[in-house]
Image (cartoon, rainbow, N blue to C red; front, side, top):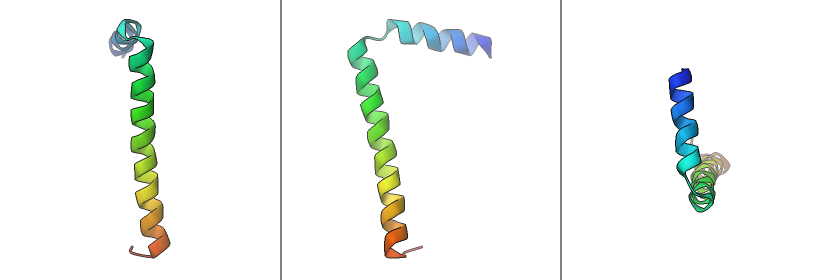
Length: 47
């Protein structure tokens, strides 16, 4: 476990601020899209 954690920390140090913000936006947009689909399906009573 600690090996993985240290590897992740190393990767984070190598990344630039722009990459970090880009990935955060991408993850947020994916999360938002999933929430939208779930909400849309529930609202229309498809399931």
